[in-house]
Image (cartoon, rainbow, N blue to C red; front, side):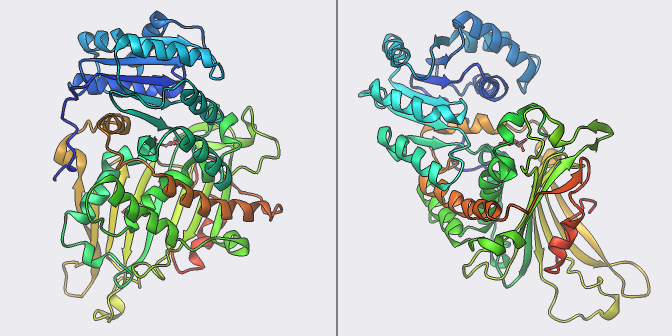
Length: 502
Ligand code: BG6
């Protein structure tokens, strides 16, 4: 399989300073520093890379090094660690201890950047979202938003706003300091190999695209099921729910990649132009339509993989009357020529029985049932399944004649498995994304209009939920596929949820 046309196996030759705001947090330990380690191991990083932590805690560079060493031991993808590479990464670390709301901290940062001679600057917001505006404002005030000699970019983590209005307000703050070309809004799903493969599969192969439309496709199902619960993240999750945590970003991204037209070129603007068009063609879910075409669930106590799991409401930080959904199913429609009339059934939930992320394209039944009653019980045999995790691969199912004197048709499959073909050890999403923003390639990052269009769609749904306060999320036991009404929800439209045993 061809790789995308920006091979990440190029070593960057320019000096770069990566400033991580919120560097004492979980994201830095679990994702960013391990990703930097992998990039260093593969010799992709510039010789002059400076990693500058900026956070409230009273650490110094040595504390940061010790903490990040422990983080690498726990989270680095390649173990055992290569000591020389670890030392290289740790040796490039600096730390500024400052609250985000104090200009003096940014002045110290300015002085450090000068001293290091780091003219290419990547600011990374790995803080709680409430701090984004403050940090961006102070970067601007300290004169750090551009550098005469090199480039300055900013990476903003999700959530980028919590509804359309707040996303617009944040965007205004960001654009008050940075040009759009400097802004890299992360959705880590876009950094996943298998997610990038959706575009390669669709647009590097001639045989699928002609069938990729309403004439041949009956429906599409996108599932992101997680076995994990909300656990210690309840404080954040309680005001987010699946709709903000997964749907506005990861699920809508999977949907746009599945539904978009072929871009005129594989570059940031051409790809994002097409994704935005899909988001703008989503039929708004407002009022009663939003109530009937979405289903919310909340997990109660149960068992996941044999282990007891307390109910969501039992978690510390969760309101006893919480109406936050931990599961969401939706019927999404795209009003354009390619997709009119093809429902996209989307679901995502926590505390599910299995971890699976997949896109399943159900093709239509043949126009004439030549094999009469012996045909497949009305169900069309052709389904294309892109499994994004955990068993990455692509499966095409079709009907075949089972051996025997009668015309008995069985559904059989052709399988492609990433692990079997390419071996294990795919890079983590953050490796690719960090590399891309250092390279100045924003293809796998969200553009402003894209984020706002996604929030526009989601905000209609949120408003509808708010105006129907009696509609509570439905209960489901942890370790099950959702509330009892889940099946009814899709059966109304003649569909059925996929069950992962084929
Ligand atoms: C994050 C969400 O963005 O994505 C988490 O905040 C979720 O709630 C995670 O568990 C899922 O990511 P992945 O890569 O494990 O599928």
